[in-house]
Image 1 (cartoon, rainbow, N blue to C red):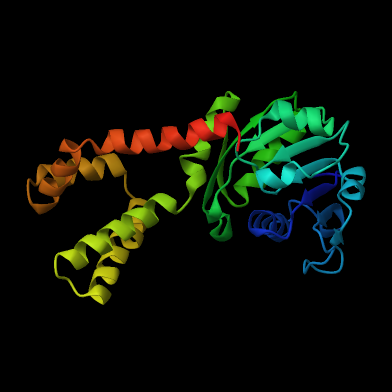
Image 2 (cartoon, rainbow, N blue to C red):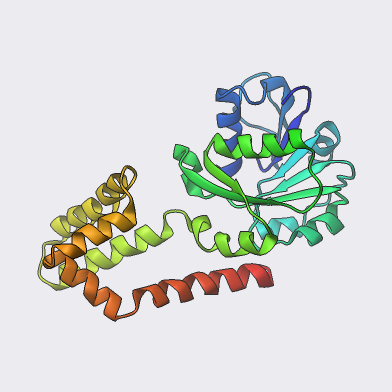
Length: 258
């Protein structure tokens, strides 16, 4: 990042820590150009990474500031970031409010998910201010360190995707729970039900990594066998509408503000 300094407020939390470690491991940011703040001012990032308890001190020393905090914590955050680029990882906090509260000239909203821990997050991001090309490339590179990323055309995309990709493992985990509970009701021993559901959710997900999901559905439906019957039942019960309504509920909450 040339001679610019990156500061992460809340950098010892799950998201902030994963991003910081990935940036260091991939040499996107040097340790002496990375600042972390948390309430205790303590952390384990190596001797060259400064960990501070004073958020304003971090802002003053940084060129780009990442807010890796929960939305409710933002209400208590008092920083002055005029002249800085602020990157928010908070769901449901609009860029206009962040600008107003911090005085930042440029605000980027981004929505990674829990898969940052294994560098498999999908992170959409939106810039509410005019980023120069170098900062734009850095934001993209920062999120590519923990998976894949796209700049989206408007802020509403961030609110919608907060309820889609931002949920991370939540939807697969709910599918897992449903498969287990229904198998047990059908008389399958609990331990076997768990292993079978794990094979569907985890094993199936890994298989999709190297195959086109829509093409796979077409292939399976063409067999007109057991799998096709199960898929048709879900289609008849309007599974797409159920999922669409669920994502809409989350997106509406994000638009309204948490």
